[in-house]
Image (cartoon, rainbow, N blue to C red; front, side):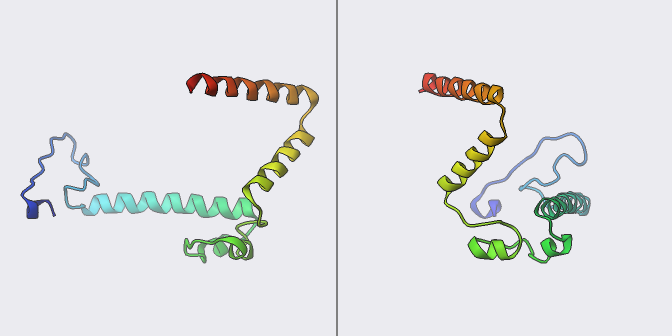
Length: 124
């Protein structure tokens, strides 16, 4: 703690809620309620988005308890489709983009890629 090493913080502020969440102030009940509400909203948005875009039930997402999943475990949980190396994935993605693009779009993409490469080269 700061006081244990002789440090004292003084905060200058205006507004009763300005110091909510400051590491140098105790967390008020109001601040705790606000942060919990914000966390609940973010969690609900995340869970519903994962469920929607992965095509799984919201409860299945909640039941993961925000655990970390890798490899086959992620596939088994419905959070991934397949195992792949990064290069194989990029090659597959590039192939899908190329197949879905019109010749005019492909030309624009090549020009855009060249422009970005030139910009990066100039920055070096």
